[in-house]
Length: 208
Image (cartoon, rainbow, N blue to C red; front, side):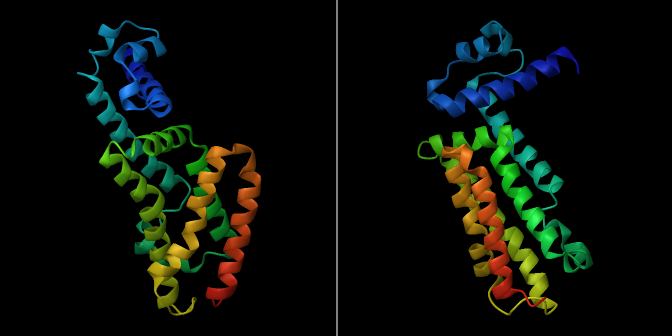
């Protein structure tokens, strides 16, 4: 990787960590420069100012999150063009995809730092409040709503409102992520509870 590209990557990574720990207003360009061991003037070769860098972090976070979502095969909306694969999905695979989605959100370093930034700054920056809702409330519900709609249409799930059932299914994930963010040692407990939740949900709502 060229040196200037490596510097830009370090800028994104270290700035995100600082913003997450101190909030946007609590970080100065000099703090960022110190974190990557360079002089402040060097930063301006890559970004015009702190706001430009901040906006780039938002952009990179969206791209990274979508890539991670695809990697764990949890983008059910994307898979609607191939319903056969969704219909053949076993309970074990459903559990694995859901747990992998949970672990990705919980343990991906960039995702974790950006989530902290969203929580810290959501009352000061409306765009971060909106992104938090989209990522940890709306996105999981939309993904599982897409899956449940296919299952209902093909007689593999009890008839009902797929959006409401998706909310029921996804809500514990957001709650457990919040718990583990505060108490990382509870991850194993959270995963076990999530698996029990999925199995109980399937007993009540899936027909096969």
